[in-house]
Figure 1 (tube, rainbow, N blue to C red):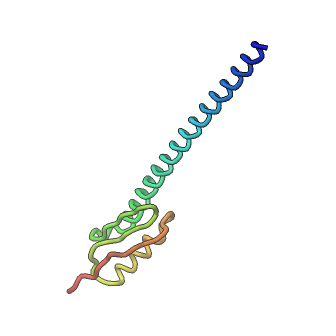
Figure 2 (cartoon, rainbow, N blue to C red; figure 1 turned 180 degrees about the horizontal axis):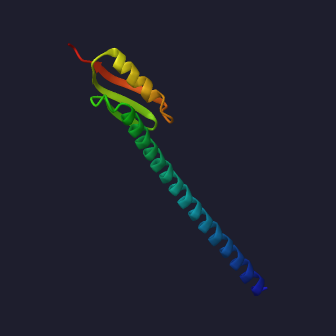
Figure 3 (cartoon, rainbow, N blue to C red; figure 1 turned 135 degrees about the horizontal axis):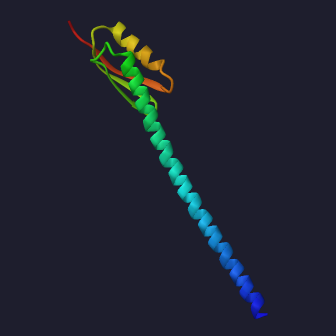
Length: 108
């Protein structure tokens, strides 16, 4: 009888230990995946910014920032046509969810 109780207690302890280890491993995996997703987003944002800046290389006065796929264009342009073209260029880059314009047209 004592042997049966001892075996039952050992099985319960082993099960609880395994469950705790699995839960900890799961939590660690989830945390790692969340960190990887944030890093992936930042890397993707950097790539988007780089592509847009390269496409607007002749428009050095236009600033480009990207956060979570949302691009913000800032600075002063010579005409509305140049601003419109910059917005179109940014919108065409893969991964861009939205383009926000803070561009101003320089007075002559």
